[in-house]
Length: 408
Image 1 (cartoon, rainbow, N blue to C red):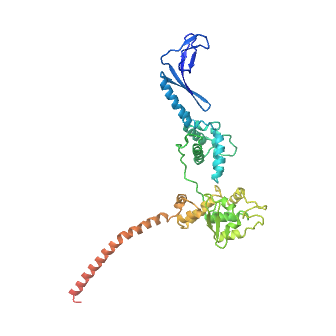
Image 2: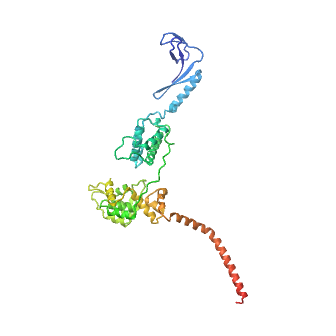
């Protein structure tokens, strides 16, 4: 770090940096001629090192001003503010993405694989770039390119385009990762925080009609039937069902206890007679605590092939296992069960997740109007009764007078 003056050799034009304050003359290193350093103010510069980078700044014709600026730069370098040294750690996207998954996602999220998948897609676009080099425009360009096609090598049989919801999940992961980079002092600011999500269409909701439910159960084998019965009668997720152990079942109280749920909270699921019968008929493996497992006692992991076989035999298309959960909720609502009860049975934290089924209840809006009507009725009924009473007393008085005048 230093302040220096710059003079030019009048013979060869070579420029020299003069660091000594009171130096009068020097010898040109190029032509060996003597250079007289003028006593008047010259062109003063300051020189500083930020990390491994040398930076020179021209200040002007005043040495005192150059010294003041040089002192200020020293403070900025110590505080990490000069040249944005906080973000000049120069950590590449793919390197920090791996650290983010290992240190944050795997520790704090059950769905850390989703973060890994999203970052793989993002990495195909941002690989090789440093975090501080990724601008808002770069992220906007990613949105455009991601919607056009699948980034990277396309696999036959896979869709060539992605939905807006997919892009939004990836952007959400990017925002979270950049937030952690700021907290961990790897980045000065989150450049992704101002990025707007794409507008998504209303969520898909497919459910089975009564005759379709009958077909599905009739066309299922011993392995799939109890799994389908549980899904249709409890609304449990596939992972929750396949992870069930015998000690989770309380046949005396007719309750299934779920400890490993999506939101991480314990949930109790009530069993009806169909569920109890289906579970009782499942043959217990003597070496495994799992209800649904293979001969070796390992829990079922992938039942897609068996489920697709059931759907093919039943003639049902465009249907996924998770839609059985929608079927459970939809038939509850259509049977007149109130939405808050449905919310509790589904394990939803937010009632807004359950409101998507409200249109299936013909009495939902009418009951709300009736409730308002009853409230308003209590406001004006006392006055109306008073008027009716006054009218009744007036009418009786007239009738009495008529009877008296007639001599009756």
